[in-house]
Length: 456
View (tube, rainbow, N blue to C red):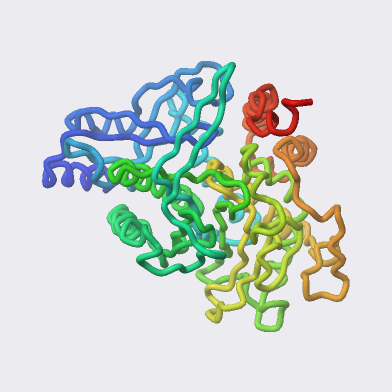
């Protein structure tokens, strides 16, 4: 909190007749939680000492005590249009209950800030910049159930297109007005929008593309974008999902992340004479990401459903390689960029079943490892598709399951520990949580198994 933070928020509370304060924070897995209290209780003491909560209920690895405090980040304060009473919402962070109110090292926003600090510690860059693409589906109805003797799901979309629906126009694009409303509310929350359109999926797939922000702000924007979409969908009696693969035989939804690094206000990824106008630092950054891509999938694609999207045939990334305009590669170098200050790469595997802070921080640490260790992506075997040595070897494919990704993370996570960005305890807890999810799926019959095996 800046020294001017509290007076500014106090003035907003008075001028806007705010009645309640709402604190938002993600649990470890990436689900949003919140806590509300009367605006009269927001004091400088609360902003300094925090409000107590049970940290173990947020999925974190237990430390000396599960008692923690939420401390508001007043710089993120915004009026919440979805609350019945006048409410000022803001992000909060978990802190320990010691006298110093030490930041909790497993909080995603803390991890994100430490990742950017690691950039500065290494002398590589001052800041990372992230441009997200939000892909999601809209359905008129979504029914699903699971019990001992019955399970299934049903999704209903009134949209139907012959072939793909990329950039489909109204009236066939049924949700352009809905996306307009979403983007307008995103603007009220200070979330920049580049454009929106219908995606390739013929049954209600959408995309909203954001614009560049630093790592933690990008995570905040992802959390709020989902919050806005879910609330507006409820208002319009629609169902929105960021599941990577809700429909068989249709395109899946990702969270593509455009990114570059800045030092002294200059984009260090640009070099006029480099491959695709990329600098040596950018290529080493690519080398680091692709070297650690299998382990990264544990944070960028952390659901069992994620790997139903990462299959050939649907413009999904499947191969650990990079290249110009190659949508099947893990890393695409956009060929349409002409501004050197926006020279960038696009990492395509992530989806929004991830904790966005941990997702971005892990990618950044992999890229930083590549720069520090000067990992040449071509020499490492990740040649671009327009290089003569490209072979498309089987071993170049991304993991085929969450289980494989978790095994890779267990083997390869030293790059995440640099400068204590990812605590070892967080990684252990992540592996435990995600293996519990795998066991929950593997122990239950799947509806399609009845089609395959019931009459054996």
